[in-house]
Length: 474
Image 1 (cartoon, one colour):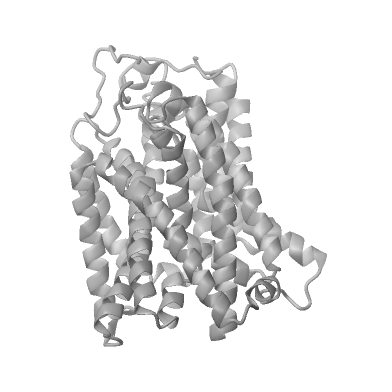
Image 2 (cartoon, helix red, strand yellow):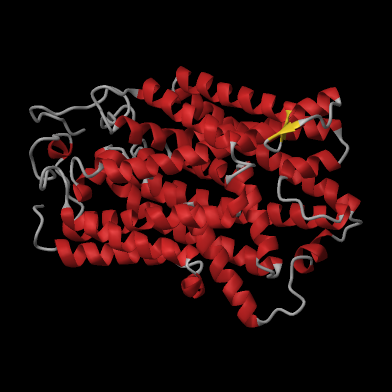
C-alpha cells in the first residue's frame, strides 16, 4: 500500500485516508450486493414503475431500455472505479487530481448535496414501509394530515431517521452486514407479491404486462423515443454512484473482483428487478384497476397481514441498507472534505442526517411536485460534466498514474495548480453543466430529453481535454 509521507499532509482518521491492504477485503459478492440493494430500493422501484407508465411504450420496450442502461452503467463504473481500486482513495481525494486540492471541494460538495437529497428521500420511502408495518399490526388508518403525511407517517419517518443515525454510529462494518442480509429477502418478497397478483389476475398477468402501458396510437417512433428517454433517465439515476464509485471500489480485493462484481451486480440485478417491477405494476393495475408505483401500496391492497409484515420488514431493510452505503458515505466524505482536520466521520454524519430530516420531510410537499424523472434527470445532468472531466484526466491526461502524496498535500505539489484550483476543469464544468441541465428544462432543447447526462459528460470531457492537454503537470 502507498504511504503518505508528504510534509503537511492532512488526512482524517476515517473518512478520507487511503484504505490499508487489510481493509481491501471486498470480493465480487460484496460489490454485487451494493448494486443489488441500490437497484432494489423503494425509490428505485417507484422510478422503474413510473417509467413504464409515463412514456406510453410497451413493457418490453421499457424493459429493454432498463437492461441497456444497466450495461452502460456497468462500463462507466469500471472506468470510474479503477483509480479507487488501485490507490485505495475515495472520490473527494480522486477529484483533486482533475480539479485541484481546493477545487475538488466543488465536485465533492455537489456530490454530497445530491447524496443528502437521496438520503432524505430514501428515509421517506423507507418510512412508508414502517408505516405499512404499523398499520398491518394495529389496524390504524387515516387521521389528520400535515404536509401530506398522517400521524403514523410522521412517526414512521422520525423513527427511520433516528434508526439511520443509530446504525452509522456503530460503524460501517455493521452496515455492510445489514446490507448483505437485506438483498436476497427483497427478491423473495417481490416474487411472492408477483405470485399473489398472478393468482388474483387469473393468470392474465403476462398479457397485461405487455399491453397495459402501451399507447394504442403508438408508432415505432414513439417506442424509440420512449426507449431513449427511459435509458437516459436510468443513467441519470445512477449518475451519482458512477461519479463516486471509487468510494466503494477502494475496498475491493483487486480489479478482477470489482469487474466481476459489477458484471454480476448490474445487468443481472437490473434484469431481475425490472422484470419483477414490470410484473407487479402490471398485475396491480389489472387486479386493482389502478397503476400503483409504490410496492407498499400494492401490498396493502392484498389484505394479507403476513405478507404485509414480511414485505414491510424487507423493503425497510433494503432501503435503509443502500441509503447508508450509496448516499451516506458520499455525503460524509464530501462534507468531511470541506475541512478534513476538523470534520470527522461522526460529525459529518450528523450534519448529513440533519439535512436529510428536512429534505425527507418536505418530499411529498415540494420535491415530488416536479416529477420523479425530472428531479432525477436534473441531478444527473449537474454531475455529468464532472464524470467526463475525471475520466479524461485520469485516462488521457495522466495515463492512470497518480502521485498519492501530492493528492493529500493541500499547499503544494502537482495538484495544487493555481491556488489549489485547476482553471481548465472549472471552465469545462461550467460550460457543460449549463448546457446539460438546459436539456432537461428548456423547451427548445426538448428533443434532447434523455441525452442530458451523456451530453454533459462528453461535453465536459472534450472541453477539458482541449484546454488541459499539454498544459497541466502530470
